[in-house]
Length: 393
Image 1: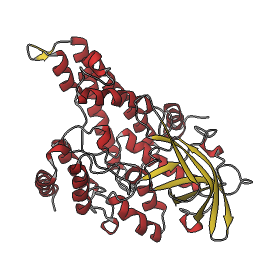
Image 2: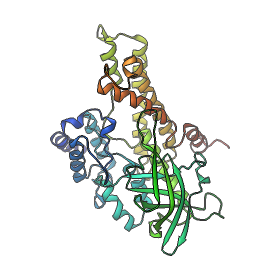
Image 3: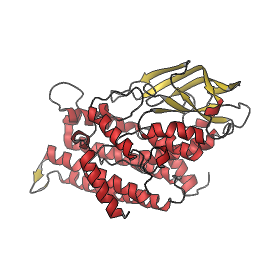
Image 4: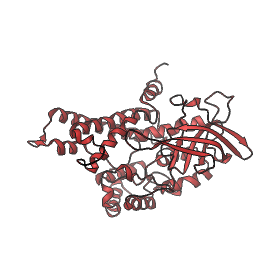
């Protein structure tokens, strides 16, 4: 099928199947995370997930045998463009799609892929990430959560922090220390387990945005089958690094959904108004144009990188560049909206504020975490210097 024929097919299907409420900006409380504990404030969120899951377009480039669409990269890009054209929300978002799913496709065994990937593709499972610890943040390889062999199982003890969505998650992908005598990067193993396992305790951490997506997670004598190890024992650091590349590509826009997000220009025109058909505030107008140009250039760069990486089908260290730049672009976009809306984007609750204004306030506050999550901006700069530019230590 030609790309134009596929575009026509995708456009027709989306027009027929994407509900009207799904063609609007997504409030935080309609986040389509899926999973066994999902509660859908908007019933059409679940309808959209089911339709896209049945079509295989939740994960369009994954193999059909695992619930994907089996699309080529060029077709997936067309689908993304057509979703963007109608401002369709992603049907499902989360670490299953952007992180553990791609890692399992690359490192998982047949049993692990057959068990987990179809559930991810249909939004039936919510994953969280067990990486950071109270004393192991940027120096992740110093982690101390330990796993000790007991027959066919590992017994896991330790603590993780900033485990996003752990309070709603069904499963966790976790880094544990299986060999305390080995060099720190070689004694780490990557393992999967059920969050309902006895001994798992989760405590949410409240953010300045008013939401609690981050958590502290505690493991006390958690019994996990040894068959849940991904790749080989002691090779978890290799899997972990690859997964971080997928995460950073996702955060930076290297693996994107269809929705373009709230338009800064539309917000500015609404709150500041026009002057002869142009935005009245000249300085803000210049900054919005510059931001739009940067967005366009960034999008084209990401697209070029995807084209150039067809042979590997996996992100490279360039994902750190996209994560760093995408982070700053998103923060700048919300700062421009704040300049345009003024005090109307500083509301927390009560009369005088529309729901969309309160949503944007929380979204603006949430962007402050962008330069920390997925590896701080300082970490990304170090990776770019060493791995991309080849600068000496």
